Amino acid sequence: MIIRPKVRGFVCVTAHPTGCAANVREQIEHVKRQPAIEGGPKNVLVVGASTGYGLASRIAAAFGCQSNTLGVFFERPSERGRTATPGWYNSVAFENEAKAAGLYASSINGDAFSNEIKAQAIERIKADMGKIDLVVYSLASPRRTDPETGEVYRSTLKPIGADYSNKYLDTDKKTIQEASLEAATDEDIQNTVKVMGGEDWKLWIQALKDADLLAEGCKTVAYDYIGPEVTWPIYKDGTIGRAKIDLRRAKDAINESIAGLNGEAHVSVNKAVVTQASSAIPGVNLYITILFKIMKELGGHEGCIEQMSRLFSDRLYKSGSPVPVDALGLIRMDDWEMETKIQDAVTDVWPKVNTETVDTLTDFEGYQTEFLRLFGFGIDGVDYEAEVEPEVDFQ
Ligand code: NAD
Image 1 (cartoon, rainbow, N blue to C red):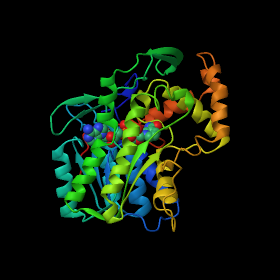
Image 2: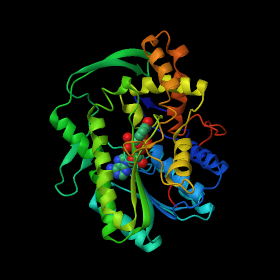
Image 3: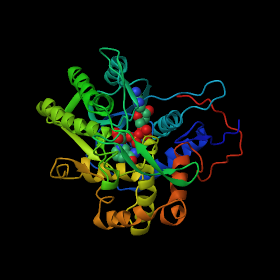
């Protein structure tokens, strides 16, 4: 079939297998152009490995450090003429490329929050890999089923304390509009912490530790975002921000639990980038379009792969140095985003952006291009007029 993008709000309901594979190859090529990383991890588990920061982490580990990788994700294969989700195509492409490069790569598709998937991962690691040197935890999910009680929790993106209204970008209509968001209830806060907080990260590490599958000196990292004041009511000070506070608490608890192995748990505060998760956050997409224009002009613009490649080479496996962290013990990959000159420019532009100025003051086009690339569209060298088989499977 010939596959075209079908965008519905902040998702695209189709994905292009050849385009997704080309996107994965571009990321691999980026990592291969960087200097080799000495002392990287041999065996890596990535939870949330199929898109965004998790996929980029997997690529940085495999092609920057020659790591064996096990990827866990929740994606949908192609069925009855419907295309698969991009994470499915990305993961098939990643495995093919890794195996062609002589690297072990294996994947588990299922609910990472469940006991069953943790048990499957443990069996696979025992059978194929040996002990794990790095666990990357990069889940972004709207819901979680508690593995013990079966109760389903849904995360929300809401302000806390008071209703909040601010500008947002309607990407379908290319207009700037005002959106009002109702303040979260206590239940919203607790539910969001349950889904996006640190509980499941701790459960993964505990399960691996109980199975004696964590290597001496192992590391684990989960991802966080802080961002500028203009997004704080909806992000840092909102329900998702509470979940991130919980993630940092989990880091401290994990550090205690793996101290006997000389292990290290880290939280890395990453840059705002276009992913399926970030495009769903109201107001954040407008900030990203402004940020991209400024960072492309002033320098330091990065996407997922540039960030993760730098996380591995300059932070997690920086030669001869402990992992550099800030006063709160966090890895700061948002260092360039948060530079004063960048944020001053954002603050200057924010009030001036409206429907008339969106083209001149923001990188709307760059944002749209990035968004479609997530689904394998608009990638150089891909013939989108060619017939393509949507059913692609792991070898
Ligand atoms: P993403 O949507 O691109 O990726 C989410 C991943 O989680 C996918 O691999 C998906 O398959 C997997 N997943 C979701 N539910 C699952 C489940 N139940 N079981 C197994 N796998 C599941 O998201 P992303 O933007 O890369 O976010 C990853 C992390 O990075 C999040 O913690 C996010 O808060 C953080 N982060 C993102 C940004 C950003 O701008 N995108 C910035 C800083 C930090």
